[in-house]
Length: 308
Image 1 (tube, rainbow, N blue to C red):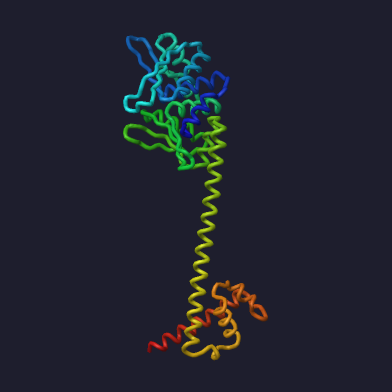
Image 2 (tube, rainbow, N blue to C red):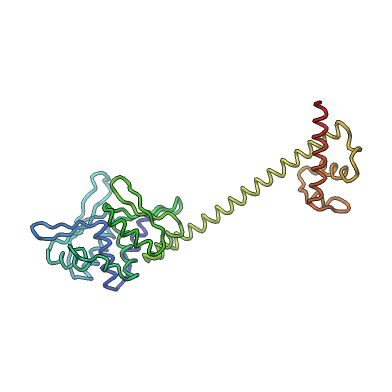
């Protein structure tokens, strides 16, 4: 199964016992994958999903909270032969009214009452994600989203997510409003909020390993760049010393410059500090650098003089 499917399966086993939280979770289902119809004054409710444990979760919640016996139907996806679609239906009008009234989805009801408690906001996010959410495999990238066909519903979910400082945003994708989170730390937080603790730990393990690998890569790249810079500088120094040696001779240099020049020729891969330690008495890194720069200036002046 995908990482996203694992999260939904874990959420479907949530053991919350508070009735108000169960109602908020049911509201998430109905808002994001529900189909509420009213024909000839009679209500009917359906939710559609491709995941059996999501269908079972909705079925179990309505049975536990209201004692309603819903009907589950299974059909094949015409486009994906191996895929199945699950429809959970409630056809009895009084049962539908009871459910819709409880979750404040009847006309003129104040839906905000369902989301008054912080715990209910968490449950609502849990229901919405099971209904219409998905997550990328954290090994590949960080992306959490919940899709809605209705802008008002998407705006409301964004507000609920951002109550927890999750920095959720909305993008229009074709005819759908996608509420999404991109930052790894925020996705970890939303998994914890939904009480997908196993998935959150797995996500964090992957995230920590990726950050460690990135940190190591940055350090290696930095050290490689420094080594390359040091080698290039040393090659230039050797080139300058050989130029002076071939055109004028090193005996024209003072003793300090002669000493560092011969050491550099003998130790082209040594660092400035290592060259300084080889001198007697030892000289600091800045002192070695000063001498080599002086030699380079002399070589450059000789080159310029040779062109005139």
